[in-house]
Image (cartoon, rainbow, N blue to C red):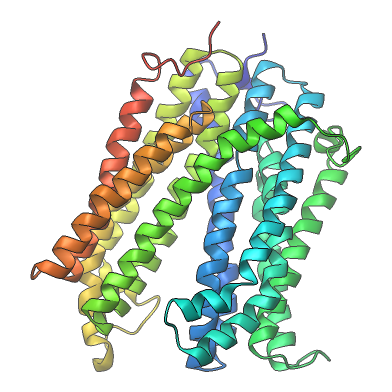
Length: 470
């Protein structure tokens, strides 16, 4: 049987005798390009914000509302199609040249991506109505609706590109994801410059121009993945776009079975943080502003353990397919160790240099920012604390996904985030003098409970029957 630990070794590399060291190198080779791509993806969004902010507060508010809905749908639906990752990894673990099996999984993943993208577009078309039902300002809602009418066309290429990203990463080409997103930042800058303000011979479309720039960028990313796959010798031999009309219903059902709980888990976690923003809005504007910046910093730092968790799903999936319990053990704990160490570094920066971190977003010395900075520094203390538990729960969830175990983790996530986390946030935030700090204690509580129970399930994987049967 093929040893999956050797699958991602670079051609010509010297064999590494220590299996833990070999697993560490394989995980890092996967994780760092994925983490870098995640960070760069956030920069793509930052480019849009920078250009829209020049249009005024109303335009920024409208785009923020639209992106909140668009981003939540995109993240959840990408999680649905993300179930392709453990399936491909397991197939390669069973047999390193599983060309037909991998092709079927990717093909059905692309079918599901198209269906999910069309569903997401239909939901986005109702954005203005949803905002009005939620009591948002009619003028802002109308602007957001017009913005959404354009950007929703980016939904389909983004979800399809996510499946292709999984394919290239699982086939040991994660650097493609990093390079493509890096170039996409430049495409986003040029497209925003052209369509927002009418440069380079393009019409000045204002807010809708930024949405169009997002569509252009998403299409560029999708086309880049297709070109990379077609021109790379290892990837092209899978011919994943050939005979695309052929179906494999059992594989589609399997992807949906594994992916649906992932999507619901994402909705639960995103809902926790969205709900926290609403609580902060009830406490006060300065608290909300400080919360927004502190959460942005925490989210940026989280992209590293998130990328490690993605790598963990692939590495554990390799060993799962090979029925290698020892390899599963090593892959999971190596990923957990890497994530906790990196998160310890980012947590230390938040604890010991909060003003330096905040200076990346605002000027801490300006008197008008005094209240905002004061609250943000308080919240960064708790952000530092939940960096570690957030990393642990992200990797534990990734490990379990590698074992194709997603339903119980979904239940754990929902109960942890809402029954534990949000209830504590409501109680401490609205009923005690802690206020905003209490909300952040609630966030940390939800993530800590999830980390404990997901890690416990991972450690008891054999007793729970999650390991492959020989």
